[in-house]
Image 1 (cartoon, rainbow, N blue to C red):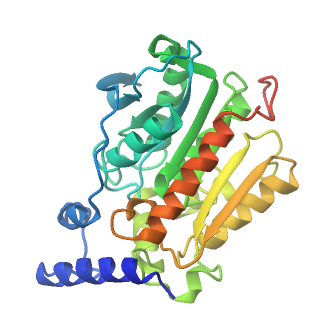
Image 2 (image 1 turned 90 degrees about the vertical axis):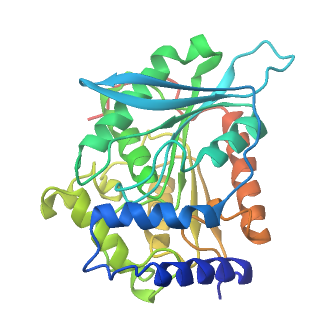
Length: 327
């Protein structure tokens, strides 16, 4: 059973979408998807926490000016450099921007006393796979090369994302391991998309809270240039054959999320490969519940636990000691 307060929130949003004549998924266009997303966003309002500094800037991504936002907490008495979280927003690879999860990034920066770098990667279908992943890799390497000048610790860089952003973070971790130049401290994956496969138990359970099987099929159709690309590890990271030497992971899933089983499967794959994993599945929660904390006490508790565990990871030694190429 869904958390009562989340159920009320989603019911209210559903009524508004009906008033706006939201079309069926078969009729929905990417432009309409973005329109209705913006109409629904105010219902997920969250407190905008004041922090030390927020800076918007552009970095080069193969000739494209990629927007990023850097959140720096108020300075403390400590002279040591700060841990760093690279964050990729969700939105089915089709919608979202730097403002979408601004409240979440501020909360993490203040609570964990960490620098957060949010990335406004290019969106499908205008920029299909693998362009969003290329932007994710560009931003991550930029952080390693430049974050020290912002007071960040290049030895404590955690890559993260929610939903489709979790997909990019996971795929980028695998790519970086193969290259062997940059050593991630960890990865935070929140309700991540990890496999272009719609036949898991959680997909077939018929969950219709915030995300459905039909919606995910629609997102994948617009993200991929060709259907067979869904079998590539960079699109479906759960298909990675050798998960050894990947960064320690904190993986978050929700009981009533169609993506639940692939998150659980990835946590098990990492564990079997000897990678330290903390896996948390939240009962009565739905996809993207961390962004519903202003409406649900249970979602708020969940968010607080996620950030508490993230803080522990930031201050826990990495399982990797040296960056070596991995074939």
